[in-house]
Image (cartoon, rainbow, N blue to C red; front, side, top):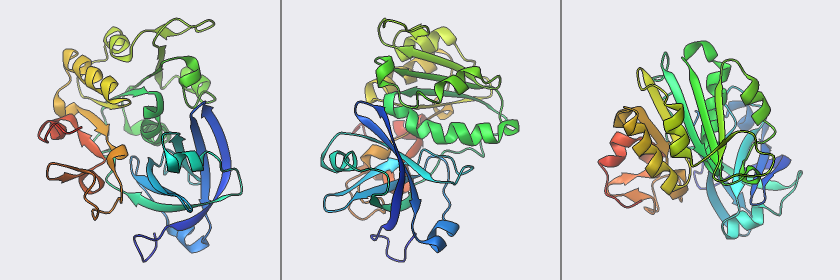
Length: 276
């Protein structure tokens, strides 16, 4: 993005959306017209957002490269940098270093059925691929989306859920962990609901992201349904630090998440040390 890989490009926050009590979405545009014009990314790539005077953290670009009016990042409040980001408003400045890392193998997924399984903030990286596929709908088979959270309040992108539910070309299932007054969709843990939905593994790819414990049991559920390890894709962007392979803090054995990832098949992950 800039000639110095450590130097972020300046960006202006155009809109801030309070997704949940601890998740905010930032829609930003790059200030430099030349950088903005040339900027491209692939679904699943990430960026570093800078909170000036505090530091930077890694977040997936969860807007789609088919929709370039702004870049969208969803930020869960978990530490010093994210605390600072959560104080910002439209018109404020942030730094952006992007795009970083690899991306979802969307070209290899063409002609296949796609099963998205997201939990909580884990819907963010799935969102970019989901919209890319919806905007290129003829290239893909049946698209199934299972999105869950502890309660309805913990679901991000609630303003988009009605569209997802109403689309004829998207089979959407929502779930929460326990009964909640007024909730009219599934109730149950994501892996259990996935088994009930029972998507076919034939000519299919499952893409999942969420809390580690959710991913663990989701992978087990997918295996029960007949999905092979190379049919399951996930993303590990939260392990990334510098984003350019210098600091060494994102390594899993000999693999550097910022260079080899953050997107991996489960087959690839099983070949790495159990350090996650």
